[in-house]
Image 1 (cartoon, rainbow, N blue to C red):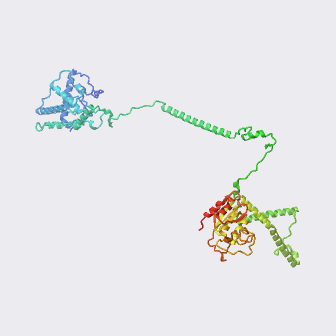
Image 2 (cartoon, rainbow, N blue to C red):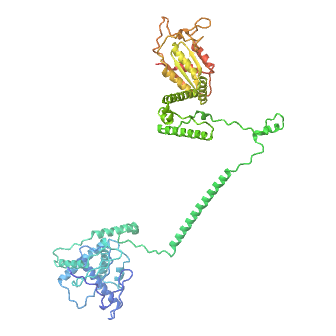
Amino acid sequence: MASTVGKRPLPPGSDENDSKRIRSNNGSPAPAPPAANGISEMERKKQEAAARMAAVKAKLAASRAPAQAAVSRTPASVAPPSPAAAPVSTVEAKKLEAQRKIAEMKAKMAIKRTPAPGSPASNATATPGPPSDREQRIAEARARAQQIAARSIAPAPAAAPAAPPPRQEVRKSARGGLGIGLHPSLMGDMSASGKSKGARGNQQRDTPRINPYLAAGDDDQKTEQDQGFDPSLGPRRGGERKSKQLEFNQKGKFMAQANALRQQAKLEEMKKRIAAEARKTEIEEASDKAFLVPVPPEVEWWDEGLIDKIDTEDTIITALIQHPVILKAPQDKFQPAPKPLMLTPTEQKKLRRQRRMADMKEEQAKIRLGLIDPPPPKVKKSNMMIVLGEQAVKDPTAVEARVNREIAQRASDHAKANVNRQLTKEQRAEKLKLQQAGDEARGILIAVFKVDNLSSGKHRYQVDVTAKQHALTGIVVLHPEMNLIIVEGGAHSINAYKKLMLNRIQWSENTLPLSNSAGPSTFTGANDGTSKGESGQQNRAAQWLNPLDERGELKDLGENKCHLVWEGQEGRRIFRNWSSRACLTDGEAKDVLGRSKMENMWTLGRSVKTT
């Protein structure tokens, strides 16, 4: 294996100091200028063609696998063999013969594929004169080799094995994959192995090996060309990425955009300010219009019918102004009175002390002005010796008697003052009447009670007297099966009556009538079952209102109860006074209550189930 790789040799006929040959645009070396040694252009081209053909033969013989098809080939210019070269030996002849056979077999395989009609290599090898048989075979082999090797760089010819192989130039478009050619050092080693193989003679015939990747690639390329495949539409390789062209922004481009944005922002701000001012103006106009009072018409529509009656004598329109009485709202009377502030005992004593001090200062001021006489000194047994010093020493018994009289007088005056402050019976009744009227003014309430049995005189007395004391109006409907009591009055009175009917009265207790119960009562007279009427006969309710049964014993009232059937509020009193009525049937009871439009209360009382 060669240890070093030499540079590409210069073209024949050129000096060593000449510069590197100029490459043309299509990747092939530009033609060298005519030599100065007198060789014609035709001779030079023939020598180059022979050198290239020798390089192709050496490459085909040395390489086991053909090179990949992505590298551009730059043929090396090799000096032509001198005419004075020594004749080849028998081994060299056999080697050349084997190489020729290999080249023919590869050429036959390449003929099956479609050759490129306008290949640059075929154009370069064309000669103006008619080629000979040997040159024609060389040209065909060269064309097929170029297609198989895909423009790869060929090694040095077999005649000069010691010369370094020419340098390969890779296309700019192929930088990786199967398009990378072999290293020149490997190419030289392969040529040496081919030389040693040729030395074996006819012991084993070399069979040409075909690169499956290259053949498959050629078939794929042919199929793609037949089917109209566009390689630009396929996936792009990383090595084939094209760099974007630089685009330079013109001066002032971004400044113009910034100015446009500023103008847009100013325009939006101006629109908002105008809208806010317009809204504020509308609000101010609306508020101003709210205070504008329209001019009243000369005659309102409700006065048009009275215009003709103004000048008449019986007109109701005068020059006097009538102020209507302001009425209080009806719901205000139901509001409870404000409660006084709750004070602690210490605060109450403080207020009492301040009030008494103010009264004493006022009395002292009157005494100084001479309006009233000063009060006598308050002498007690504890301060008797201090107030009456000399007199108490002279006659202590008389002084003590005097002090006792004054103490009794002060106690008598205090008792008289308390009695004078008390209200009389008439004043108390008047005060109670006023309180009940005020309670009634806050609203009229109504309550309906159902009592199973009212045969006890004590129960009837409590029902009757309590209703009268609280100034209640209503009616008591007496019936053999049940008794209905309807009362109406103020809230305080109704609450007190409810406590009586539901809590205080023991309805399961029965007592004998009192002998001295001859006072006036609601149940006295026609409806009292314990007494006789004016005609001397008992009334119609005597049977179920008598506390005694037929045997003369008290009736058992263990199951007797009172139920609150209904309660509510009404606008005004329905009943004028407090009364009672005995009814034998339900129809009669409904007729009695129908006069006050309360017949539905009897039906409601009947529907209440007692348990």
